[in-house]
Length: 79
Image (tube, rainbow, N blue to C red; front, side):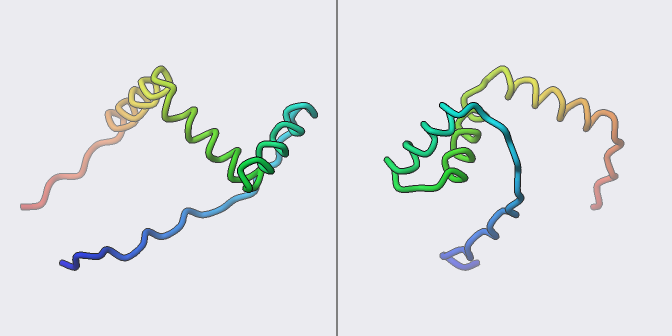
């Protein structure tokens, strides 16, 4: 096994159109200017942060995943 791993494949990028209040867009643009980044980067980072910090959402998501796994039969293990 190699010591240095090959880089992970970048995630697929998709477009999303949203409508937000003008003051939020203005602040988003100011923040993008402040950190020298794009709107897209800030929105994606903010969503990642929300998903990471929202423990109720994490709990709900785990319950959805366990419900899904209980609904679908598992394949038999190969020996």
